[in-house]
Length: 98
Image (cartoon, rainbow, N blue to C red; front, top):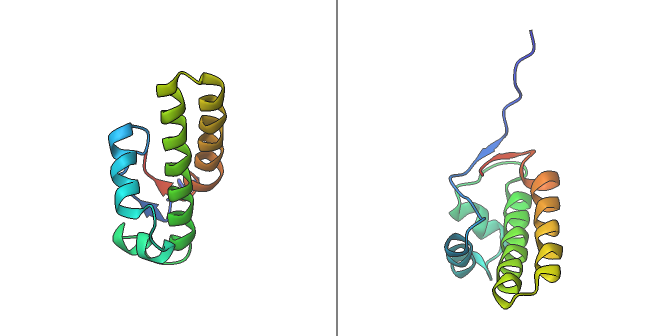
């Protein structure tokens, strides 16, 4: 019988809405990756890398949101595709978040 592989990190965080992204970037937008990992409660191997990818996701999501607000859908979709790639390749495999 196969058992489900658990992910090493769990976060109560969803970076898909404007308010959460804005709050995340205010708190962590210019911090070191190690400090971000620590403040999010991430510990152990891969925690700093996950913090880096979360920050990258947040900045790209912010760009997508701003583009949509301006009506630049083509540019927004480009940033959303970057977010999808970061999430599917770097965040979802190691973290239960959103």
